[in-house]
Structures are given as C-alpha cells and as structure tokens.
Length: 234
Image (cartoon, rainbow, N blue to C red; front, top):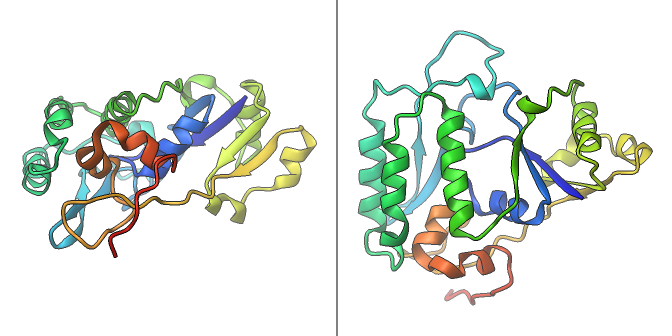
C-alpha cells in the first residue's frame, strides 16, 4: 500500500497528478494551517507573454490558525469571470480546449463557499479526464492526532501503508528514522518534468495541469507519467 498525503491546490501542476496516479490511497491534508500566497489558492497558466498566475481570493477571517478546510472564497471580487476570460483568451485555439473548458466553466461558476470544495471539484474532474482512479480521503475525516512527522506516520499506519510517497522538499524536515522504526518505506517523488507542445514557444514547465490537457487531450496521462516522450523543438 503506497500512501500520499498532500495539501490540495488550485488547478494543480503535473507533479500533483503524477503522485495521485502512483498512490494506492491519496490523503487530502485539509486540517492543517492555511497559508497565504501559496499554491492552495493559485496556479499558473501559459500565455503568449509567458506564465500568468490565476488566484482565487480568500476571505481573511483574522485567524492565524485558519485551517485549509475553513478558508472561504471571496466572491466580492469578479474573479470567476476574469479567470474564465483569461483561460479562454489563451487556450481557445488549443486542440483539446473544447473537451474540457465547458466543465471548468460549470465548476468555477458553482459558487462553492469553501476553497477546499472548489479545489476538490477541479482535482476530481482532472483525475477523471486523466483516467486516474486513486481514491481520495480527507485527513479531517480520520481524526488522527500527532505533530509534524508523527502525524503523517500515524495516518500511514491507520491506512496500513507500506510506502509513504512525498515531495523532494520533505527531505528537509521529515525524520526518516521514525518511518524506519514502524517499517514504512519513505519515498521521494523525484519528478522529472516532461516537455510537451504548448501554443506559444518557448516551452515553460510547471504550469497547471490544464495547460497539458488543453494541448494534448487523452495522451496527457502518458506524457505526465513520462511514458510518452516528446522531443523538444529547441
């Protein structure tokens, strides 16, 4: 059993979905502190001028310890229309734009109260398009305590994990010896970002998954998993 535990992001990048496809069980880490100016509420798309951020405004409740699942979307700003207009302007000529954009319109117009709800709707839709069937569960539903590394281990043990797959940056703070003591193998993702065709050269990596989907459609999973290698035109 391979477990991944990640905070949910807005329009996540390719690496998020590569971890999702590799996991047997994917835990949405939603009951930890919400951090501002982070990937929880923003991501990047490719425009003719380069990368551009799309950000979902969040209501500031004045609580330092606001959890991810508690972050509410601010609809006082006209961000939905602006986001959809920006996506359309930059991708309407992409070969698979019409396959996915109508669903994004419905999701962004769904007026979800919480950012978590919006992010999960997008993640589920993209996973479906990519034919990734890994089950999602929420850490807030598990009622498992612990701090830092120990809470991750407790979640893994609860799910009977043999492997814990995490991002490379986690090597800076995770205590591997604690995983060794409970016979859980710690794996670092080490994601190799693929090249793929974008509308506007030069190629810019680390965009939202929708950049890949709009440009490559059904072959997107093979590309993000590096099963299909495309040659750079540079």
